Picture 1 (cartoon, rainbow, N blue to C red):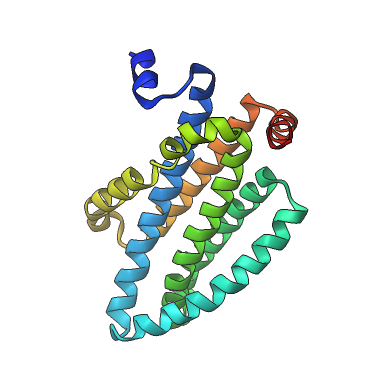
Picture 2 (picture 1 turned 45 degrees about the horizontal axis):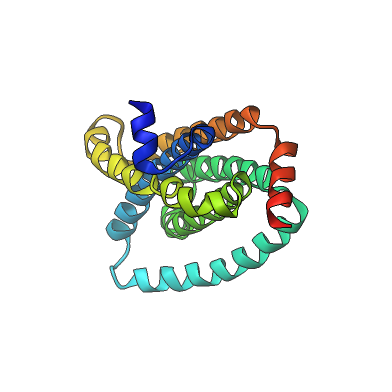
Amino acid sequence: MKQRLLSILNIKASESNHVFDLLSIQLFIGIAHSFLNIVSFTFFIHHFAVTNIAYAYLVVAGFLLLLNVGYEKLEKKLSPLHLFRTILLLSVVILLFFRIGLLTLDRNTIIFALLVWGTLFYMMTGYAYWGLVSLLFNVRESRRVFAIVGSGDIPAKLIGYMVAPLLIPIIGIDNLLLLSVLSVCIGFFLVNRLIDKKRWEGIQRSAEASHH
């Protein structure tokens, strides 16, 4: 059954472990983002006029410019693995801050910032994810597997958006942020498990060999 699936997906057996590990990572990060989206947009629409969404995205655009500049500098100082881990840990801290902030700080400010952070979170984790993927596979392998390892985002969003309406009456919409934290933590664990299967030094050597 597994061989048939690999044949359909055009994946070699030697690549399958990395491909499915990466799909799992993207799945849980995508679920985290879907929960974050639900919380941020629900609260924003409830507390602000719809016209304020335009202002929020102007702020997002400004922060994205800063993010791109900052990320480019970090890429030169940190390995993709270290950078990915750092981003996931930072995301956990920020999500916990927002959850506590909804209880203790000015709610309107936190809600506005939460909407902005939702886009930044999606972009940062996306950059880091594809940075790691690009080192796990050489150019020839990338042509076959990139479409597969990038396909986890859609089912992740589907799962998150379908499960959330069932969970909100039980745990409340605020606590979806805690589930988002849990999903990011699982993603962090899966990243570490992936690297345990293939030493990072080996990944770097194979990547350097493929680019020369």
